[in-house]
Structure formats: structure tokens, C-alpha cells
Amino acid sequence: MNRLLCALPLPQLAEVLLFAAAYGLDAVFSGLAVLAAPDLQLRAGAAVTPITMVLAVIGVVWILAPSGFPARWLGATCLLPALFAPLVPLERGHIRATVLDVGQGLAVVVETREHVLVYDTGPSMGATNAARTVIQPFLRHQGIATIDTLVISHADDDHASGATTLRSALPVQQVFGAAAGAKACIAGLEWRWDGVHFQFLYPYANTRGSRNDRSCVLRVSSGAGALLLPGDIEARAEAAMLQRPILLDATAVIAPHHGSNTSSTRSWVRAVDPRVVVFSAGLANRFGFPHASVQARYRDMSARAYNTAHDGAVELRLAPSGALEVHTARPALERFWH
Image (cartoon, rainbow, N blue to C red; front, side, top):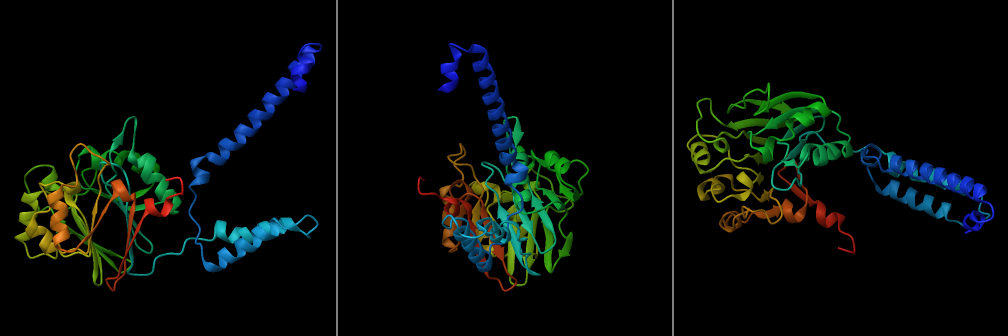
């Protein structure tokens, strides 16, 4: 108001004051832009323990103490453990798999104690893709700077569009599947990380057929627990796998082809016999995935079903004992205005 009053009798002074205010606002917005930058927002999450929570409460009470309370600024130091405590690593033999919410597509991050595997990179999204908008922020939040293995199950856009983006953003030690310079994911290829067994079950060396039916099928297991990642295989590939003496049973499975009725045949679902099935599908997608008959087949096997379209990202934690924990992002992040 004072600046406006100065504008009539003293226009030069008003101009100086307005410029000063503009520069001040520029400085404020520049600072806010730094605080809003993804690299700062999405740093690795801290390990929140009961001790760090108690210290944080003490710190807040200390900071908000009445005027005159000695050294209130020291309360801020009590918040540091909650902000910067390192993430607690997984125990040996444990598996954490996160089926990310990438809309109508698939992207799964599998973690062991010291290693990371990314299975598929989701769809393109206009001028960008899920690797840039979903996978990279998630990896940064988890404190993951290197991908040990990247698997691109097949070349369809909803599975492979972000492969180049991810490889240019982070060091990737090895790549399997449908990506430039990748190794073939031939059945029988296997390796172990931190007490966890990884094995490709399909395709076979002489496999022919559609791109979907040549998807890389990966089984991740430890003790009595197993996760099955089948890409977009359909009935033909499922029948071929059932003819071989391989371990198909899994504690949890990502539904083939997002729950299409061309996949998850009754005999294949019976062989896998999962306790949990995750459908990675887009909300109100035009394909109608997951198909009602497919959901019924898993329900008939008493499998608990999750859908990224409604649940958001689905985190599966598998222990060697076979114990399984499931955590979904959307209910966990829900606010009262939802």
C-alpha cells in the first residue's frame, strides 16, 4: 500500500521499491524451486524406528517450547536421526519386490540385501516414459544408484519404452531380453544373489510364436518363498511350460499380460498355485484388464488379488520361511480429503 501511495507524488521512488520487491520475490521463488527439485525431495528415505520417532517428538516439543526456554534451536538436532538415518538393509535370503504403478504397463523392482533387478520399464507417456516419471524417482527414494540386472521381457511399448532412458540415467551391469546389446533370457539360465535364486524358466532356445509368447519368464526364490514374473505370455507359452518338468509354483505371481483372458489358463494357474496375484493394469483401461474370468480363476485358488490401478504400487516382502507381507501404496498414502 505504501508503495502505491508513493506512485503518485514520488513515481521514481515507487519504481525503486517495486523493483526491490520483485527481486525479493525472485529470490524466494528461486529458493522454493531448489526445495521442490526432485533430487532433494526424493532422496533415500530414512529408517524410521521407535527411537528416532521418540527423538523427533522431543525435538518438536523443544522447538515449540515457550519463549525464554533455553536453547530451543537445539531441538532441531533431535530431528536429524529421523531425516538422515540410513535405510535398514534386507536380511540375507529376503526378497522385496515392488510392482510400480505405471498405468497400463509393467515395471517391477526386485531387491535383495545387496543387489537390484528391474523387470520391464513401463509404457511411454506422451513425450516422456514411466522410467523417467516413476522408476527413476522410486530408485532414488530407495537410495539405489546402480541396477545390477535389467530384464526387458519383450519389445512391446508398455514393457520396454523406458529401457534406453534407464540405461542412460543409471549404471546397469547386465541386460537380458528385448533391448539393444542384451543377452538372451534362455530357460535354465540362473544365478544367486545374497541367498536368493534367480532363474529364467522361459523361453526355450527354439521357441517360436508371437512377441508376447516369447516373453522372458523369471522365477525369484528363496527357501519356501518364490515370485514369478511371466511378462505377457499367453496360453500357448503357458502350455509349453506345463509340458516341461520345471518348478512353476510361486508364493506370488504377477498376472501374465495384465490379466488378459488370453493368459492365466486354468491349468497354468493351478500349477503356479499362488497365495497372491498382482495385476499391473491401467485404471479403466480400454482392454478391460484384468478380465473377470481371469480374476475368478485366481480366486478359485484362494489367491489374494491386488491391482495397481486401485492399490497403487504393490510391495511384496518374501522371507525364506515362505512368509509373505504385502503393502500397497495408495491406502498407505491416503489423506482425509480423499
